[in-house]
Image (cartoon, rainbow, N blue to C red; front, side, top):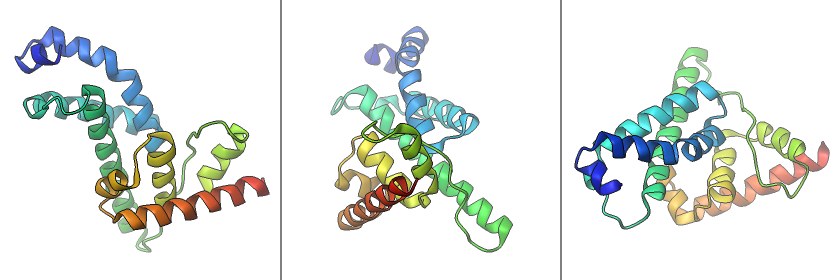
Length: 168
């Protein structure tokens, strides 16, 4: 299907879209938490993927390649939103945190509330590491930080999340 899509077959592109749209929407929602933002990023991601399909080299699965596009677009969206909010508020305070989901080792609702109280950077690291399954080298590349910064931020975020969940 990917080869047919590369050749411009719109039916094959539509089939690829159908196969991946739900999973990629979930990825965007976990990072953005606002449905409309996730839908916008999802649409932009598929447009970018189909425009750049000739750069896909089968070094990974199509799904992994597409997921990377969705995550990068989501992070860029968050950065742009944060810049817009800080310029509007003129104080540079981080944007208000939203709820997100995590694997169910603790009570799901407590974790959602705890994640909602984490600073944006901590929430991104936890989402990318625990939920999306990226390692610290990949997280460093995605966020433009060093591997050691990713590791230390993850450990701080995890410690803070456990503290918040235990207080709830």
